[in-house]
Length: 249
Image (cartoon, rainbow, N blue to C red; front, side, top):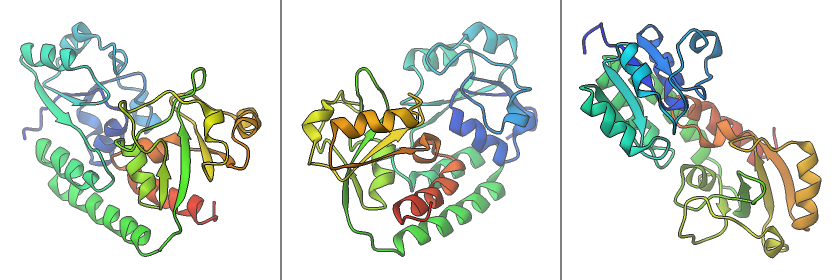
């Protein structure tokens, strides 16, 4: 990997990962949702959002590489970027331990293999703490949207991350990754309801609203970045969830 790579990242969590791999100076573009680490990325030009990428702006920035994600970005944009002659680096982590491959993928792509291995070691340490504790299972609703209420299927990174702690998301089966839900139908059927901070920013007053719809469940807010962001943040995310599940946070 040459030292003159000019990277645009269209994946918020991977923008953070690239910075943690020592590639901040190589970043020439980001989405408006790429907000970590703020002291670094606030100086990096924006190229639209994850779903409404400004291709002309990427061309103007002289990018050589663009990092995309299968779930977060449109395939049409990835194809258009390839047609522009850019190197498109595709990512698709689906479960917590996929982060190890993600770190190494980015490390190989941009000449940061040693830094990637250091992150892998940190992840393995955090993961070891997760699996060292046997936790009782619990059925949970994880809400990402209001009006309509929407949750997550078991095919998502979020659900598989929670499952590592014994929290089993419902519905058990779904034809879509982010199903619409009738909350009242889950009354008496779930142990907890988790209200994510993203993409819908649930707040304190929503806790009482949901508790009335799902009586008998413990309802609480949860940091969506810590449950849904793969990349380097996943290391802190595992420790955060350990504290939440074990009642220490």
